[in-house]
Image 1 (cartoon, one colour):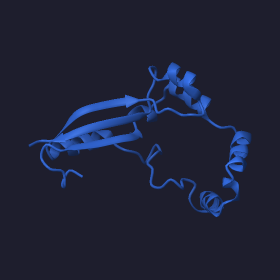
Image 2 (cartoon, helix red, strand yellow):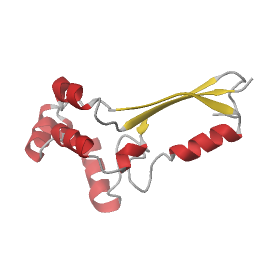
Image 3 (cartoon, rainbow, N blue to C red):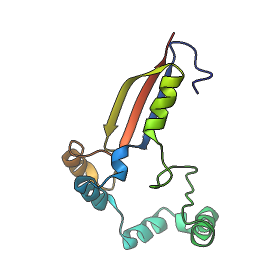
Amino acid sequence: MIRILRPGGFIYIDHESSPATWEPDTNLAAYKTLCKLGLAEHIIMLFDTREFFTLDFWKGAFIKLFVNPRFEREGDIHVWPDDHIEWSEICAIFAEFGVTVENQVDYLCYQPRGGKEAYDHYHSLCGDTRMVIGRKKA
């Protein structure tokens, strides 16, 4: 991205796991527990949305069970303790190629299953997502 960015241009990276995601945090763990679907709820949702009856669902389930337990239909998402964004390396690359960090914010990603009340309680106590804006020097 930096190579094709014109001088003075911005790089915006958002919705990637923050370093806090990989560290023990009782508040974040409590929020995630509130937002997690139980098995019965998950099955009901699959039936209600008719997803249970799609080839895509069964193909994904097969791959996850027999080929790769990390498979996600959403694509190449880095959300594992040993496979995630290394923010220190991103910042080092920024510095090496003349990009300054203009803004960096860690925040709690809203989970609809948890509801607004839970989010309002936890968003000031913990975060799991990072947003960075970098600007290439002129």
